[in-house]
Length: 191
Image 1: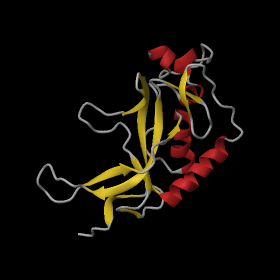
Image 2 (image 1 turned 120 degrees about the vertical axis):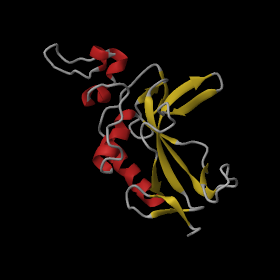
Image 3 (image 1 turned 90 degrees about the vertical axis):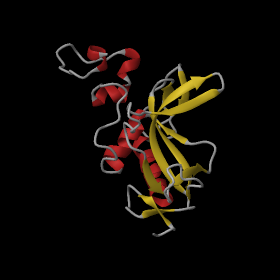
């Protein structure tokens, strides 16, 4: 067993994530606001599996991806919102409580100190920075479709809206599509 490499690899370059080296994890979460402040809750199925599996990036690949996202959205108008609880780290669009976002956490993978099932091995991710990057649903989809070839099998969605609905956040103000537009998955028609 190689004790220097983890069971994880960088989603971009494919290199093994090393123990105790800085890396970045992208997790799809829901932004929430509580009395104690903002929190992020992972989106999981009833069986405990993630709706969108967290993805690891080595530091150099994350820095390159972050720069590409910032370049892609530099001239795109941000989606302003008076009810936002935070802003996207890249496009600066407002993010409301209850919206799906990408949370990018910097940290290190370490050997687990305990093995609850009695078997050796296991690892834990320990954050090294107090403030993670938050990417809005539009930027996280740009990361998955335009920068890294399909991080997940399906695009990240708030509900079951079409891609255009995701971009404009149709769950906030409704879908501006005309009646003859057949969008069977649009939130305003099925939500």
